[in-house]
Amino acid sequence: MIASLRRLFLVLALVASARAAGAAAGASDPPPDILVSRGLMRERGLSVGQIVMLSADARGAGARPFRIAGVYEPTPDPSRFTAKRLEARMHLPDLLGLTADPGEAGAVDAVGAINIGLKDPADAGAFARELAARAPAVSVVPTAAGGDEHFVIIERFHMAISVVTMIGSTAFLLALMVIRADERREIAGLLRLLGLRRRRILLQALLEGLCIATAGAVFGVMFAAATQGAVNAFFQWRYDTTLVFVRVTPAIAARCVALALPLGVMAGLLASWTLLRRPVLDLLRR
Amino acid sequence: MSAPVAIVEARGVGKVYPMPAGPVEALRDVSLTVAPGEYVAISGPSGCGKSTLLHLLGCVDTPTAGSLLFEGHPVRAMGEEERSRIRLRRIGFVFQRFYLLPMLTAWENVELVQSEAGMPAAERRARTRELLEYVGLGERAGHRPSQLSGGEMQRVAIARALANRPGLLLADEPTGELDDETGEQIGDLFDRVNADGTALVIVTHNPALAARARRRLAMRSGRLAAPSVVAGS
Ligand SMILES: Nc1ncnc2c1ncn2[C@@H]1O[C@H](COP(=O)(O)OP(=O)(O)O)[C@@H](O)[C@H]1O
Ligand SMILES: [Mg+2]
Image (tube, rainbow over all chains, first blue to last red; front, side, top):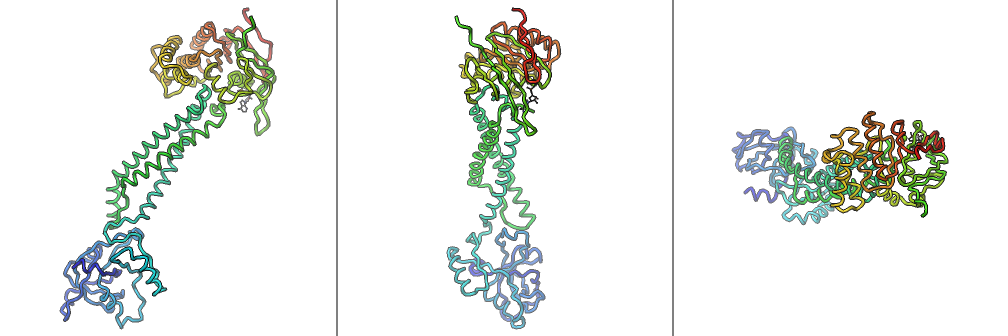
């Protein structure tokens, strides 16, 4: 039954308009079934099998009874993970009946967004084009991830986090290398004064850069892997979502190491090269 | 038999540092020849150009006027790599502040320049042991500079300077940071180095150290003031 409900569903944001209506049951037809989000269920102390009154109007005009058939976990949405997900899912005819109430015919449509789950996510583009052609006032945007699994990982969200992290660590690595090189200004000058070739000093810097970058990348990946559970648990608790905030996959770890190694080596070489270009005596002068 | 080629020969050299506030003339028309096995001391007030002259003699820097020959070869015509090679193989340097590599032990400090010069490992080990014993630090080979006294660090620096059997050892205020007694010991060591055949040019404020040299020069305002004073012979 849940499966059949899911097949054709709409999410209607009914913020604060769900009201318990246990005694209101008793009409001729049994009230239609709905699914209630976990957040709404807990917030209002609802339970499965209960009859509730739903209305598309904030004041409760034109309310209709529905029977809670089950609970669902809303698909995490990175763009609004701080919002409370007080939502319900119902059949489309029930939604139309609810919103097309004659007494509220002129009222502003309270539905701001509708997520439509297609049987075949590959149809999203064609569906969006067709709908946009028919309803020019509606903006139709296919979401990146297809299915309605609970643990959808939005690529862009993770990419943004990764990019910010990598830019940050790159800047840090560069600064570290430049500081190290400057600390070693006198040593580089001394080595050159003693007659060591620049190539040899650069090679030394290259090896050191490689060691530091390797250690840094391995430590970073290990640290991220060790703490991701705690980080996710904290933010999932904080924002009451199942959204996965950090996920260190082998691919991400490999990408991180692949980026860090050349970066570390280049930073070390660059910092040393700027030193070695200067005259020997400049390096030794305090 | 022809006269031996001078180790280093300066002919009318000058050194001008271009500075934002106008050029600084650190050396003016300095001529000096250092023959193999010589022992030269240069003294003079601070800022008169002693270090600048030493850097030119040591092929660390190049003159802006005059000509400089190292073992008969014009330094001006040499590239940085060539001067670097000469510094490594033909010249030893000793400084006031010792300039040892802090992360290396005494042994490694002495060995480094030998490995850069491509000396085989066995020969290197023998030479390093010999040198540390020569300067009286055979027992301190595994110690880092931070574990050594000033006099001991300077002796390691002298061992390093001699590692590749240079013809010339240049020292800039080598006793400047040492007490008199330690300075005496370093002076004794220099005497022995010179007696063993290495030419020495020592820049110093220390009259006792200068007095050990057979040839003493005075510098003033970028010039070698008096004609060379030759002691002894
Ligand atoms: N790299 C440099 N740039 C500008 N001026 C310098 C530089 N090195 C030395 N000088 C100037 O040249 C003069 C001689 O310096 P130096 O040879 O160090 O003297 P000394 O060793 O006799 O004390 C001084 O006036 C000094 O300020
Ligand atoms: Mg000086």
